[in-house]
Image 1: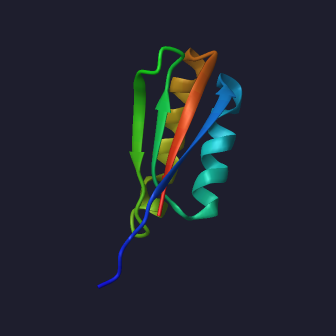
Image 2: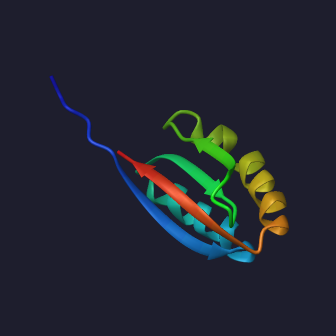
Length: 82
């Protein structure tokens, strides 16, 4: 049986750079989930990523991330990788 490992990375970014960073993380292709937290550490949005769904959800998801980013000055992006 194959054991799956996952790890987590965090990035602090300013609001205007959130969409670019999320696009970059999706393009890398090894993220399972992306979580965006506000300055208080509260989860604002959580994006589950799967191979089949990435193409279908990418455009509306990035639009939503852009709208959320406009409200944030600083945030943390948590990436859970395979």
